[in-house]
Picture 1 (tube, rainbow, N blue to C red):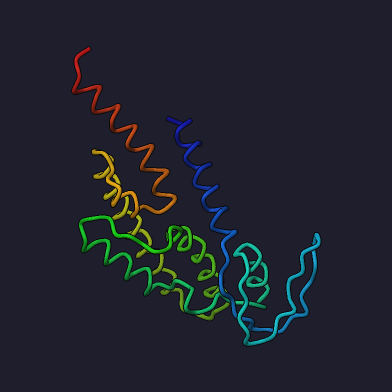
Picture 2 (picture 1 turned 180 degrees about the vertical axis):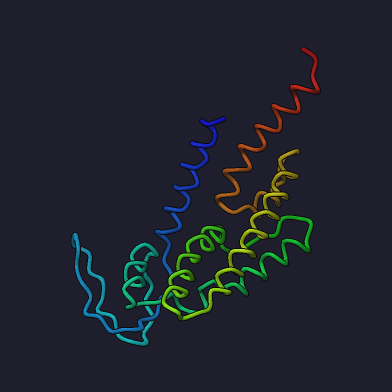
Length: 186
């Protein structure tokens, strides 16, 4: 079982790496001349202007209070609550436009923690974000377990996020093996 866990965790880390290379819209909150590293230049950044950058690059500017994620792109506790409620209220798996939306929630939790630590938002917002994230992930996982008992339709497969496709294939194989063990003759 340990081998499956390690393989799954490695695959999930690769999916998260792919997400971190996705571009996000940022907004400059503090002007900066920018810098160059390994032949790539970043900046200059002008206060109030928007910039599209890979998330992993934007993150260092965010950590240094030069940029912030553009408000229309950022998930907050209200957004995650909406996702969690819609997943709770609909018995089928819901299609999400962004195949990395779970990764986005995972990564943006860090940004909310940063805002709490800087006293920009109350800790309650982080607590709500965490609670809604747990509900969302658990609801989607239950739906994946139900789907893994049968073959996946094309419509259902389209609704899976990148990380859910990984766990689904593992679950499907494990459940199939387990069921066949008990339901077939030796």
